[in-house]
Length: 499
Image (cartoon, rainbow, N blue to C red; front, side, top):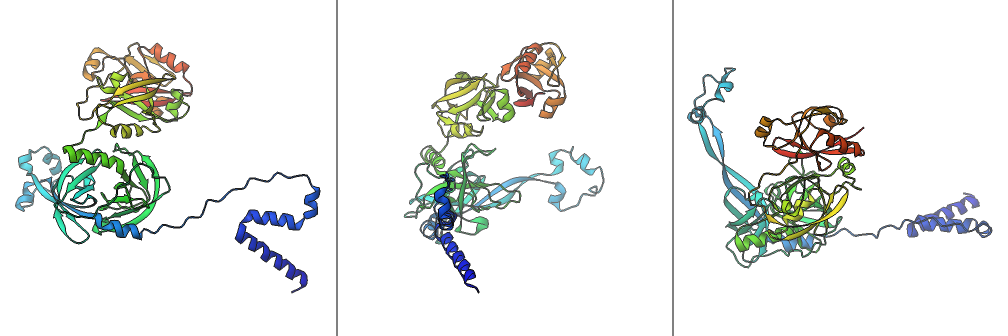
């Protein structure tokens, strides 16, 4: 190897050494200074390019201490119950029906009475879940769906002792249940105080997936305040492996504190697919306190039905961003009605909490108590309006919601709708005092999901009393309009793009 080659090799080794110590930026500065010192002195000053600063390095957590310390307070729950199922008389007697192969057998069988068909019988059911001890005298938290319809609940500890548990109470809305076993000096888990959990933070689950006691899995917090279609809980979303049997088990932070109760998974197979959801422990704690003190749970209600705001609705209501909860129905005489809420209002904040998606509203209201006073910022016809309400009790009977009014002659509109006023008989049969019946839906309206037979109640939140009013509102609208539609017993907003 020549002398010049050796020099180049030595320079390359020096450059690699710089990369290993200080990164690419140090290499660039070192090369510029070493390679052309004269040119740099003669040239005009050059503005340095912005430098991306890497995040600090983090060591992976060791969950062995948490698992060893808190594992004994995590329990396995076995549930026995029964369910009703239909059976045939022939099945009961063990005789086959001689006409079972007849092609019309099933058709005529459906019209037979229950005595001829056999009736119902009780079939035993069994289930598994998890839970965790929060009090040394035997108070245990788990999911309501774990102990639903249970005739017997057995709690098994890690030391193999088993106890029959009493269900002190359960709340299907929050999916929280409280159990009690007759024992003393039990190990307990610490509960987190406050809501300082961060997205990206490491978390740990302990439970009994498929009956495998004290299984430990770990992951990170994927999101907070996640709204699910069937719940009123601001769920913690994680990528912790959770499977059937984990339900009711604790979710720990890196300090070994319980931050949530593992409750649901999103799956198309029935098993873990990377999306698991936990009930925040502050929510569960409020439910637990009510059950222990009174044996029941009361939830607050605002008395409105809401739906999601998309870009079409945002354009229709002149909203800067598609955020908030769109009010499609107001319970007559309910808290929202008394506060002045109307269909077409968009609730943007509640007690200072920003409403991003429609699911945020029931989650916040669900944490309140009946009788609590709340303040709301509502977007109405292009302006912000401040309203206040006193929350009611969710168990109170729901009254019928008020609708809007409309009556005039038939016409075909820019929307692609053929409208006419309701006739007297149609009003009596439908229970709608006034409205424009949609006889035909084509073009933009049909594409948006409007159907013949729907009743148009309002446009962009403004009640319409005539075809002319519909034309006027549509004519002043921009990219889209929001139609309030009565379909059967339901009222829904449908965004329709114009042009």
